[in-house]
Image (cartoon, rainbow, N blue to C red; front, side):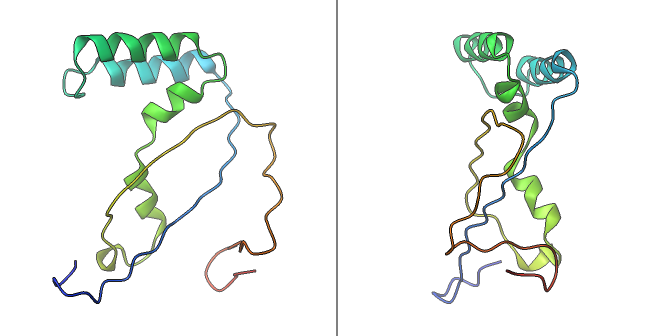
Length: 116
């Protein structure tokens, strides 16, 4: 939605989310279906590498990464018409089940009007 001027404002959105994997097999099956989808832009070597990565990752992180689109985060933002995604990068890693303590300079947001 940029008008081509230098007035655009960029924000980096960081979301920490801890999920519990209840069925690793179902998670892996969903990711493998996505990887095997002919519309997924992978060559045969990349496809096989991703299949092996998902199958050998006991945490489910590799599978979950295939199932989350970073642009879906925009669904969390009200007034999406005023926000245009520029870049998205997603990282998924094992967790001990709790969020790490925030640095004093970081801010937590509990919803509209609740910035700490």
